[in-house]
Length: 359
Image (cartoon, rainbow, N blue to C red; front, side, top):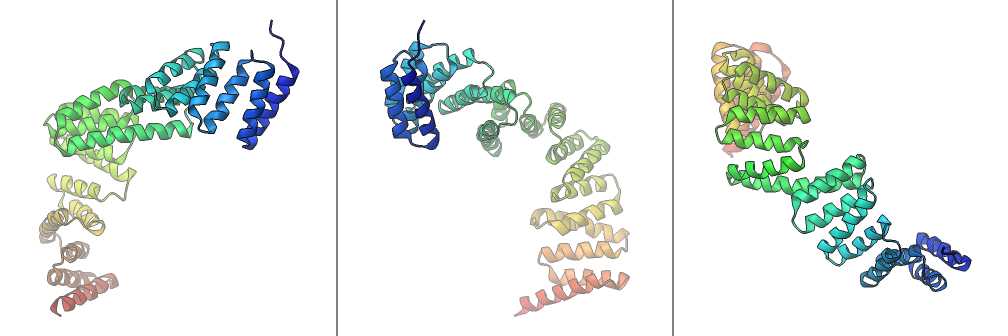
């Protein structure tokens, strides 16, 4: 049975204090003295390795961690220390082996899985990296380091998927997402992009199942917006309207939702309700191509409804499209019908723009 040296313990404890104070060089000297007095204590080598790692003396730290493991191979932290030094040396495969040992010795420690995710990421093994960070988060769901690491990994994956989509490589998107789902089955955006790719390849029946799964996992405005488009593609207009209403409820500041809502109402023959939603879109938007479409539909609306708000929406649409003469006429009609001061403001704005154009 090993009897610990009291003087060695004193030097060790002093080394710990100095390490915490940031006096790394002196702390290392204390650990060395402890080792000299009692070379059979694994902890002394481990802490000497930790200090050397902090001093960025990675080669030297390797030897101390290895000696600690030699003396006590069943201590998970010693394997983690060695893995940390190996990671600094870009020896990722060796680091992974040590981290696996650490994890098997202490399966409830999230940082081992976190470090594994970093090592796999460096080897471009993204699925393995994601699998490990999910294990870390499962053990410590509120750990910001783990959550940020997952955000980084999923952002990389998201960028890859978006690159495929922008290149219209939809089959590649679907293949990539199927792999990701096996590793991260509760990630809603995987189902969202799968639904989008399926819609783009004229498979709305499969797309609706994917977007429904995304919504179950996370109730987001853009998911309901895509669900609305898919349902419209399936000629389920009433269900499509319900989904876009949910999208607006979740995010009332997203202009495209109002355009979609207006389009669906127009399709149902609900002209008056449609013009109101086109008007909200016009008030919010500066997207010229969609503005032009919205204006065309409002032009139809004012034929049926002599409504000052509708003339105002039409005037505002013309104004944003830089058709100032037409916008002035619409604002004047709105004012004639209601005598509201806000229309006078827009009459003045349109007149000023027309004067500027004539100069």
